[in-house]
Image 1 (cartoon, rainbow over the protein chains, first blue to last red):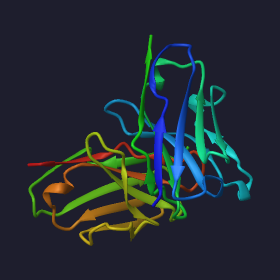
Image 2 (cartoon, chains in turn blue, yellow):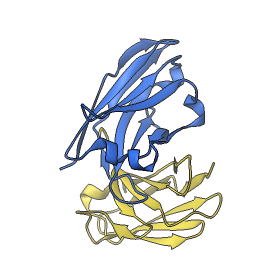
Image 3 (tube, rainbow over the protein chains, first blue to last red):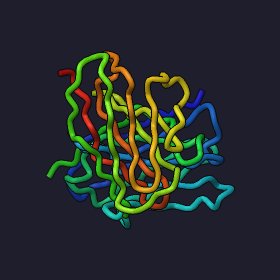
Amino acid sequence: DVQLVESGGGLVEAGGSLRLSCTASGFTLTNAWMSWVRQAPGKGPEWVGRLTAKAEGGTKHYAAPVEGRFSVSRDESTNTLYLQMSSLKSDDTGVYFCITSTIPGAWDSWGQGTLVTVSS
Amino acid sequence: EIVLTQSPATLSLSPGERATLSCRASQTISNYFAWYQQKPGQAPRLLIHGVSNRATGIPARFSGSGSGTDFTLTISSLEPEDFAVYYCQHNTNWPHTFGGGTKVEIK
């Protein structure tokens, strides 16, 4: 079974940095499309970044609010996805989910999420 | 960026009633369109993909339809566990976006 487990969230001051991890099991992360999605308290989900499968170029895309501040990467040896976040703002507060797509055009596996709180 | 507008924001219904949720896109989108259900404290769960295909384990009372810019999620007869927030989402291009959500609450 596909399983995604996020970690690394916590409380950080505005302007600070944080790195989130997503440990994948049940599939090879390199072969999958992966994304980070976040959800602010009481709001709907919002895309953060996407990483295509290695065979499709491993292309990275970022949402406008995080472009230049966030970076998605993966470690093949540990089957782990990362989200490096810097210059954090209070608007970055929320639960961050690691998700993957095994169905074309849909994101069917989600982690439980990790909470990031940016204090101003 | 494609904007998805969901209506209504809140739907107040009783168990056993039919729920019809709408999602309108700001421009024509592909069939890479999905619906998700979210309950408090949980991650969203995929319900429908490819406009009308139920995800694994999703009951037949959930159905999706639509094309172009207008899409619908129908729950034929609400069960107690269906009261939740529902989001539409497209994968036509980047950035992928979610709608603002429809909360289905118990009347």
